[in-house]
Length: 358
Image (cartoon, rainbow, N blue to C red):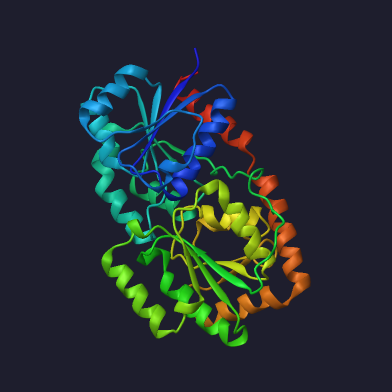
């Protein structure tokens, strides 16, 4: 009889949806049966999956799934309130809380403090990516809680450079949500100043307007107008994840790069996937991205908030061809050596074995 695991999250969107898809495929190859439960539909609902994906909101629906499949363990991502709900619905086996996408360090700290009674009462362990601030917070706030650190999985096989007709003009791209932590305002400021040296510059933004508040949309449009960038901007919404290599490859071929302006990232999937496609990246040191950006070897860092430094690093990425080629090649090599899917399955199985789940 194989292990049966359920992964849960709020909505199929962004990095967590990517992670669930990749790890379920990897774990299934190693003989672990995986299902995913989302509480609401989202933009990722269009992505095909070769494992069961449930969208269920009510207690009755969720209880039906639990009773039908009798999971050995449930991994609850981000949503600590769900742990209590699962226990109330009669699930009495292993629940592991997974910390992903908790926002800035201070946001993550507040959330962990709020969640403390839930960790004490309903959960057996916490799973985190190798992200310093998350590890420190869990050690200091709930030292009694068993911790497992497993690097997220990146699809280095599907994400690679795809040759095609490059855009005629250089592109600076940005991927995220219109929210404070993703810091879209800094992206616009940096692009505005780079355009002084590169008047034919284009901006590509990949985001889901459904996940943005009206206030953020309004602030965004105001800043876009005031910087005179509206005629330069292409917005791409809800591009299925498996098509992103085509876009990252185009950005690379255009002579441009991906700019990540986040305040804090638990991992930074968009940046990792761009590096796999040999698309140069310039990023704030947002913690999670440290596991694959090494400054001037696999990508570039600039200090958060220092627009002038970002402009200088960005122009070097575009103008210094030997460095650009070196970063593209080293970046891809680093991803291949560091993030194979087999490593994830092995670490995950070891975590399960520690609960005597075989």
